[in-house]
Amino acid sequence: MSMTTLDFEAPILEIESRIDEIKNVSGLGAGEIDAELKSLEDKLTKLKANIYKKLTPPQKVLVARHPNRPYTLDYINSIFTDFVELHGDRLYRDDPAIICGTAKLNGDPVLVMGHQKGRNTKENIHRNFGMANPEGYRKAQRMFKMAETFNRPIVTFVDTPGAYPGIGAEERGQAEAIAKSLMVMAELTVPMVTIITGEGGSGGALGIAMGNRVAMLEHSIYAVISPEGCASILWKDPAYAGKAAEALKLTAQDLKEQKIIDEIISEPAGGAHRDYDLISSRVKDFILRALSDLKKMDREKIFEDRYQKFRAMGVFAE
Image (tube, rainbow, N blue to C red):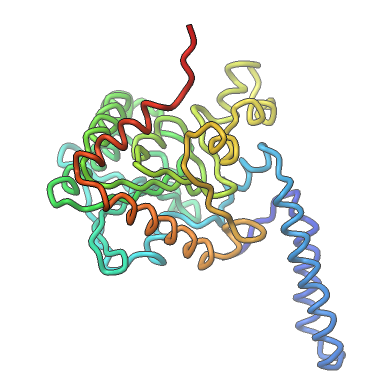
């Protein structure tokens, strides 16, 4: 898989290219090569940390959308075992934009679900770029109810620009499907853990994100509208997307401060797309800690815990 480089990552690419060149040079002695590589690798580590520590909201939007970022299936393959995908909403069709299935987490049965984007044009067309249709949310509802019946914890991964806004989706009841998903999640009495791994776009994200515990990856985003959509409404020009990203308070740091999410999961130096194993390990650690906490509660308390969490969001003024 080729690595896409963002504009602000150019200095990183320069050093990485130099490291590759040295590794392919045979004219230098082993000692010289080792010393040069060590110096460059140390410099590269510091550079990644400095660049990613100072990312602006518009830059975080780019990182959250990075095409090499791990997707739901990457996390499923790294964190869970015995995954069996389940298909269809029993009403219309299967929606490949949302992956659902049973799996085991350290031997314990869970239901796992998430948005799935593609790695190339063909896959993205198949997955509809991670934008679910109503049947995707109705499939999710079916799985939520199944988890409730069999008393299985639920883990969801969120990464979507938003619910698909096409004519067919609207004709089949997109808004109703998302609203029904919210109602079903609100009534669950099993533990639910949610991680925003990339883009958390509006109701399309929230449709599977009503967890008792919600975390965001360090450079992911979560907002009521995309920066481009916000700019088109407020300034009649999507070119103001950067300004909108600043105003939307969509970063993990903003949302943690506002108590919308519970935890920020640190990403590897240079972003999650540079080390799948490390970010998967950190995500797994969060899931295990969250479920361990929630499993101490009875089912009525789990329901109340989720209700109070979302009831407490926002500020009321008279």
